[in-house]
Length: 150
Image 1 (cartoon, rainbow, N blue to C red):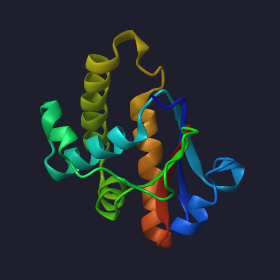
Image 2 (cartoon, helix red, strand yellow):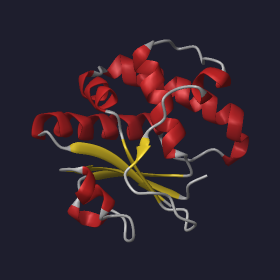
Image 3 (cartoon, rainbow, N blue to C red):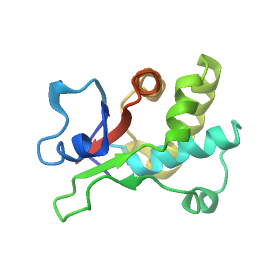
């Protein structure tokens, strides 16, 4: 499980990749959360918008979903930088509050079933709302939305 995860805006993959060693820092508009796996979160969100439902699909369906692509190749230090798929960025930018609330409830239920008491203490709805705001900016500026984690 990633200790720290930062979802951030960057103009392109090259700029996002340059954050690998030090993290996005204050130079990038971002949302920070702790103790989540960004790749599974991104896949969960993408799967939700492809087929919205409050119910949790089977884990096999999540594992078979198209997962985000690395912007930098993973090394043994645990740092990962992923690009969110464009379809997910658009879906998050267009999402209404009811959709974000339903997705947050579904995501929370999945994390609680997998991680129990070790689940993040972050307000997952607030995380999603922040990432949706970033997605809106990414759509407006033509930039990308990324996650950095350690």
